[in-house]
Image 1 (tube, helix red, strand yellow):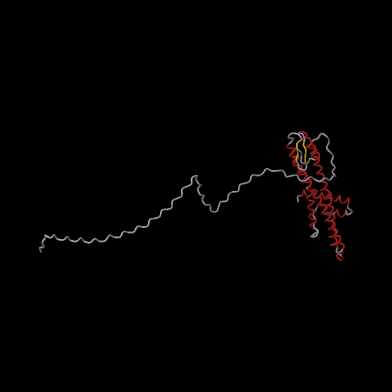
Image 2 (cartoon, rainbow, N blue to C red):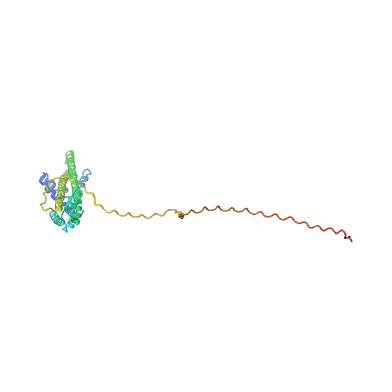
Length: 316
């Protein structure tokens, strides 16, 4: 935790001690309680330490409430060119004066929407009002929830305190151990401080939630910019908060094209079919059978000698 935040928690703890002393007979116990001063306490007993840790976390969160309040008003403060520390009264007066120049409008808390009374109104101002309403409604709901949880923590602390007191009463022979007596007194002192701190924070959270609701009612009157005085609102009046307005619509983001993964074995695509069907391919010609070798011609017999003529006489 930063030094600045620790200082805020410590100051808040001292304020809680003052409140406790005015309403609790155990003021001398609370005065020396670490928890009551916003410090973290550990008893080294797992039956109690988780509770003390939760109480300290709640104290640290409560120290940030003023900054959270400023954050919800920041859109409107920026639109009005005011300082970040401007009071609610200053913000409301500046809003009313500027809204009157643009003709005013009607604020619907349920939808966190401003409808101009005439013409286009003041779009920049109305957009800032709508954003502040959304943030402040969310803060008011969270504070109300925290108030209930802190009240439950206070009741749980009461149960732990009774358990510690019973344990102290039933210690028997250990009562003579001064070291254990002091440790038990320290534990009960810190439980007193934790109970009182959570009870006070619960009341503060509920009060801040009501103040936030009153600010929204006054903001609606300021946006309307009527000529008459603002309607009075009772800060102690507890009204149910309107349901959460729908989130501001955002322009859809273009889908990013995923790179195509290369296919494992891409087969070549067949050529596109032409308009006219191609004629069927002729079947392959059969190979001619190998020609048989011609048989050799028969050998010619020698020609017979011609017979001698009859009138020829043989003369040896």
